[in-house]
Image: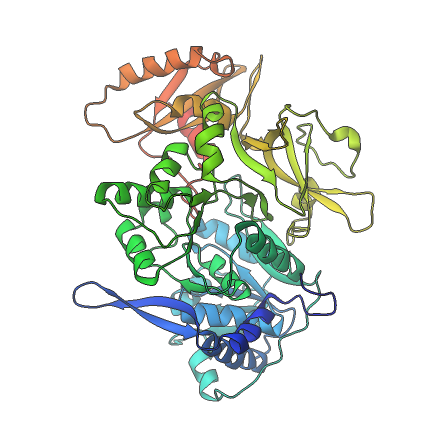
Length: 553
């Protein structure tokens, strides 16, 4: 734990590591390929990353990007991205991080809500900013990473030409509750919201990840979500950035992932369920083994047991795939490993009991309360439901964010004030229950439950029943309005099978529905060519879009 007298700034770990292990690689980044297609990597040692981020921090302050300045960062994953991000934390500025693939409309809304004062971006981002009017009213400082054309402001290269490698920089001594960054949610259930991260939130996340997964200094990390690479210096790890389109993890070239793991002897990798599936299929087909991995971590959506089982076969005996449960607003909340899932809980999942996400992690207070779509201003013990009853998951702890930026109504709906001053709980927007062992079972998003005249159906339990069919890749429960009633409909995405007979499959699924009490009311099945999914993980299903599609059908 960081003593109360020390800075909570997550960037403070970087100069410490630069002193302890200056020549150790902090980041390996693939920047080009040889004639034979072998990737070549640029590398920053810890000392180099510290020096470069110091130079940039001084440059940022020279143009007015200082403590508390909200700063949009739109730079592709690169060595510049990592040095810039650490520089922003060092000066105490507030990076605003938005997935560029979330869509032009959502981007404009998010940038307007963030009300940024500064914009750091590559030329392509600067052109988009001008053409689409991003931040027109609030932006005062423009910094281009690359060539500047007609939009004014400064360029990073020009600023750095005025500095030397010997420039020191004193990392801002930020407080635990001081705003550190604004991270936008993926928007899987509506317009993305900017979660306000404090420096204390980041520190708590780092400590939780280190302790839960026993990560030690000197390990090698392969993060397929770039932001996770920023935790590496705090954990004393080396980050290997893979060759991939980070907005399309479900389409990743699995060979490039496995090659990077083998080349650098990667010990930890993070991947969305869609990426884990793709790498597992490739590994099985080509008899790949990944003996250096000590753990794999997958989050963003439940990982199907079949996907997990296939990936585990690439690992040494005893090495697990861990699936932490959480959200942008709070991560991690729970965690569970593949040993328990594959040997025990997946069988319950197949029977429609939900997906087990494990025990709450140390430091997290987790409650299950009555399902309620309205705001809950203050905590009452009577809100809790008995164990075994599906309700809304509510959490409190150091890694839980307090609010959304410029979204008072969203904050009001998502937070519950506690009895003690400063204490609050976050409503995850997820449904689940606690079993007799104290483990938590996830049953889907609250907004996705289907309420009919006679029953309430929950997505994850219902879908799991049909996901057991050999020709089904995944399913999605949606509600369709028919006259004055809501009818439950299962949308089906198929595994590749050229001999598949759709009508025969639907009859088999209808029969399967009658074998389980929770799915008896489901009669209608629609085959979909490919589910719309979130840009960040390619795994969260946009059920709202599927519902509109099903309604048309």
